[in-house]
Amino acid sequence: MTKPKKPHSIFPSAADDELLAQHSHKICQSYALAYADKSFLLRDELRAVRLQLEWLKPDIIQQELGIESTVVFFGSARIPEPELAEQRLEKAKQQQETQPNCQETAQKVKTAQSILANSLFYNEARKLSKRITKLSMEHENKQYVIVSGGGPGIMEAANRGAFDAGGKSIGLNIVLPFEQNPNPYISPELTFQFHYFAIRKMHFLKRACALVAFPGGFGTLDELLDALTLMQTKKIAPMPIILMGKSYWNQVINFNFLAEQGTIQYKDLELFFIVDTEQEAWEILNDYWQSDPQ
Image (tube, rainbow, N blue to C red; front, side, top):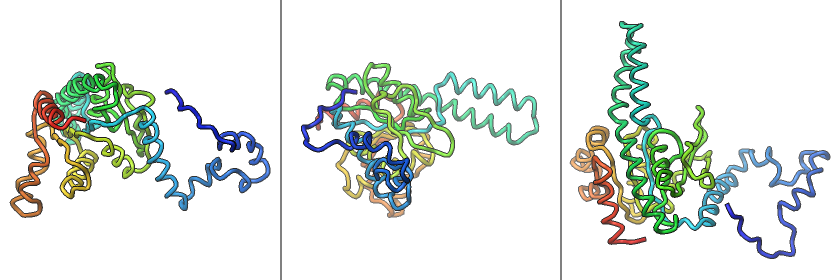
């Protein structure tokens, strides 16, 4: 990434002073420059500062790269491409053959079968991302840039589609108790890591001009319902929100029941679309963007 030209200043930079003060840790810890003192920055009292830094770093980098609008892809980290899903199902079946009376292995086979059925959405996400990225490239990779959670599964498919098209994409990864490395298809200069879920969700939406949610678990539901709530309460501007997979979403959330019970209004059902294919999703997005271009 090209570094922005430094503005002229008569004052030394923070980096300059840090270099000059490298000897300070030899005197005592309290004498170290505050911004260069990692143990100080990690104190509980500095949480507000860390929140601000976590907001500023990705925001400044995206500004410097000229990114103006993004298309957000949500979805499970546990839905791989079909070939890998088939391999995992075969492995589960082999385990069941060695333990035919084991309830746990039987459950693993059933889960693997469901994941294989849902793996078609990996390809749908990849195709849709590729199509959107081609449009983004017409706008010099400044508009309609794909952004995902940066992990495996559907997130990987989103970044992979952009990679297939030869364009840029963003990955907003997060530190978890189990290891989750960024997938290899994210543009290196747009690969970010977060500690705070809340700041990460704000970055998902700051530049969003559309959101596509594929089948997923707690994380996907959290991100999707947060976006729907913000649109419902007019805390963010309207944009197309698409749920991919009618059978999945109609069973996971009974939106009509919520309206019937009066806990949401019937007009809230117009905040999103439920579709089955990337072609349907593309037509909705393209129609919206043509009527409201970025």
